[in-house]
Image 1 (spheres, rainbow, N blue to C red):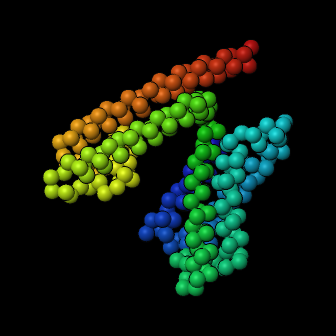
Image 2 (spheres, rainbow, N blue to C red; image 1 turned 90 degrees about the horizontal axis):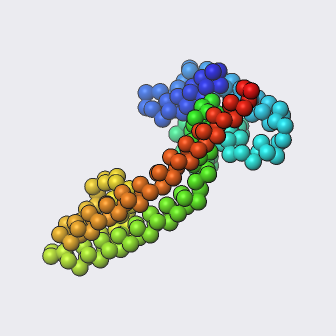
Image 3 (cartoon, rainbow, N blue to C red; image 1 turned 135 degrees about the vertical axis):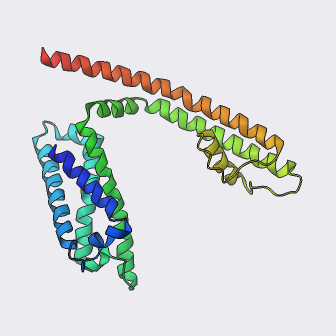
Length: 251
């Protein structure tokens, strides 16, 4: 529970750092709350670091431990804090602010912001506390072949309908004006149509283009629906296997 609490606090800090009313508390060393919040964050990171080192030290097979993806995600969530410390030690605490006017400070500020983005990976630490979530991740991992096939199918459909839409709108438009200025813009429209997002920033104006859009939407529904059943079946298999393993442990 303490681990989950610290994870939620660290994520809350990450979010509050980007909010205008509270940004100064986390980024401006002149703010009276800056060092207090920095100390809390440092204590949380010390806990995460000790937990990570303890899990590596206590693992029976360190090679098998490092073959898993969650330990590497934990490491990626910890490293940005120490990178921030190194940058602050080199360029000073002012680097956490707006970057200053000097080019060198501005460059380090960009690096610092990139490091901070990786802290959102800490949310994956919650997966270790949810058995069902671990089962779901394992099921998704076991469907890597099906997901790769899905990616190829979506790529083919997007490229095909993007090219068709560009050609149709370009050749059948009565006034010669179209939103589809290239095949890339057609592919962007195809992505948001096939995935049923539909931003509405690009849309066909001709009758034939609308027909193509309708076919693209229906094709996207079929293509995306196919692997869902496979993933659900894999999840059911993993869930049943997990229940059987728990039953054997009790015996």
